[in-house]
Amino acid sequence: MCGIVGYVGRSYSKNLVLDGMQKLEYRGYDSAGIVFVEEKTSRLSYLKKIGKVADLAKGLDGLSGDGFVCMGHTRWATHGIVDEANAHPHFNCKGDIALIHNGIIEGYEVVRKELALKGHKFLSQTDSEVLVHYFSSVFELYKSVKPSILDLVKKFKGAYSLAILMQDIPDQLIVVRHNSPLVLGKQEKGFFVASDIVAFAGKVEEFAFMPEDSIAIINKKSIELFNFSGEVLLPAWQKSSFVFDIVNKDGFEHFMLKEIYEQKKVIERIVNFYRLVGTDSKLSAHNDLGNYFDYQLDIEYQDRIWQQLGITIDQVKNLKNINLVAAGTSWHACKIAQFFFEYICKIQTNVYLSSEFCYMPFFEQKDSIYIFVSQSGETADTLQALRRVNSYNIPTIVITNVASSTMVQEAGGFLPMQAGVEVSVASTKAFSAQQVILFILANRIALEQNKITPELMKHAEEDLFIAAQVLELSIENYKWEISQKLAEQYSVYKKFIFLGRHISYPFAMEAALKLKEISYIFAQSYPAGELKHGPIALVDNNTPVVIFSSLDDIIYKKIVSNAQEIKARHGHLVIFAFEGQTELADLAEQAFIVPRVNPFLGPLAMSGLMQFFVYEITKKLGNPIDKPRNLAKAVTVE
Ligand code: AGP
Image (tube, rainbow, N blue to C red):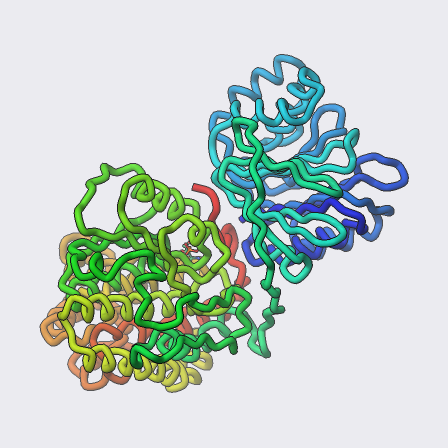
């Protein structure tokens, strides 16, 4: 989604900002822009381009000059189409104040109309442009930055982080954080600001997350930080040890393929990281995945995992309700994990879609816990849900891949996913990592509540190693057939149905999401038992029905019956089954057989093969696999 990078200091700034913008590319965007105060003319100089930061950089070669204050923006369209007029920066009428903005301004149309009546001319369809015109009008009134920016934050609701550069005050940036993250960076020669620490990792000695609802006026020598009431705040500087590892494809054609293949290693790494090997063994975190999000649990012994989570052992022992909140793929991982918590811990578990959570009644439960699962740790829907629960006295935990994310700052406790940087917009290894951590967590809670023995806990860990091997082996077994034959055959279909039952139903949802988001083929998922209640009308020979089996004997028999119902209607069946499930496999036009694993880990074991199948179909279609149209890696708007 949108990204902000700014610099104020004694170094030439254009390339520093451009470099930061390139580092934010993983978030997904459709246009980019940059503005600086040109040293010689003392005027704002800017460029906007549709497409990549690299295109912007090429264009900048033709834009002479540089300056010591600069800000850049990558835009993911929300209000207005993708074009240069809607790209940031936006300017006031005189063109001497520039603004870049992440987020969404609520009710901006009213202010836009008021300003238009006063003669302001708008050049874009964005909500962001209203902010700069408003700021300009109040600045004319107050003739001072602080009251003007305080007036602006009182006027506008929504979620926004923004940066303002004024030609007439050329050595400062004004930045605001409101429901959208911003982090400050300090180095000997100046200051950075960005929506993600990644933008200046390795370039600063210290960093400080801007507090929620705060404003900073940054100049070459100092930062004035204050809240929305104008009260002075002190930045909480921390030593920066973040290093930006260049993440490359390591010879793979796409990041998605590389990340699919990393899964075995990721699973093993997580199990080793969280492994229960005795109370005196220290935690070790391997750093072999080039993970700049890498994180060491700051506890000496694994036994104190609950301390890391901000809950006491007594709270764990008394836990009676578990709530999981997430979006997209992370939500699917939670739906799978519901089976872990309900069967292994025997604790009632609710799974919420974060985009719905804040708009439903909230029932405070005693002895409950809320676990927020997010690869990025920045998903706005999930963050809002976390904030809602934080307003009650209930423990909150976030499981995320990004230790520096806003969710980690705001949750009561944090479990690092340890998946390594995931670049592809379509999540693969994060999905597996989430299943693994939630499985381990379920077993650890069950152990604490004496529902399983330490031996069973160890078995659970060993089962994860086996599932990791099966995941990779299954891809290898079908690699040739899929890439040489099946991908072509299945890429011609215009729609797919995905079915599962019990624990394999959320996995079917994930498979349908994966196919939709990268191949753009319409895919619908259903619980297999629901087909007969309506969707079976869709079954024909032009719509492959992909069924994911289960290792539970009763569920398996039900799935066989559902497959027969489809066969009887001349449906085209693709089956993902486990070894020995011949009755089901024999019904299929195409069957993929996977070695048997712990039944709870069936989806994990099938993850790689399912993702590889979808990847190869999409490759045949020639789509931009790592950056599908319309999507962003971190969805920072509600
Ligand atoms: C996954 O392939 C998607 N791109 C998307 O559904 C994603 O899982 C969702 O936006 C949630 O993101 P998060 O895990 O970073 O919160």
